[in-house]
Image (cartoon, rainbow, N blue to C red; front, side, top):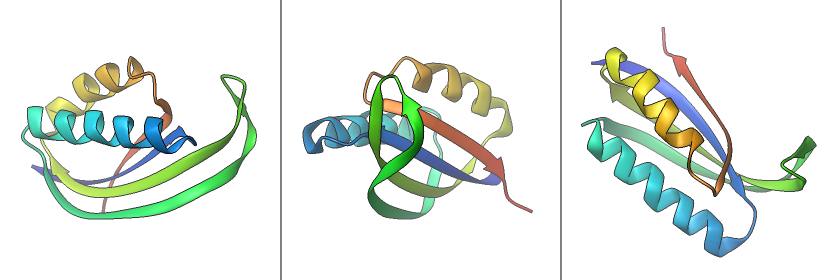
Length: 92
C-alpha cells in the first residue's frame, strides 16, 4: 500500500454529486483502499468548460492504495457519468 492524494471534480448538481461520491467510495472499497482523510471543497467555477459544464463540485481524498490498482481504478472512474475529472498523485 502506498499513500496517494486524489481530487475529483463532479457535476455541480447536488444529486449528481451525491451519486458520484457513492460511486467513488464503492470503488475505493472494491480495491480495498484505506481512506485516511477527505475534504469537501465545494462547488466552484471551472477554469474551462468540461463536457459543456462550467461549474464543478471538488472533493479531495488522501488514501492508501495498492499501486497496481491505480490504473484499474482510474479506468473505471472514467466511465462514471457524474465525474468530470479526476487525478491521483503519489505522496512523498
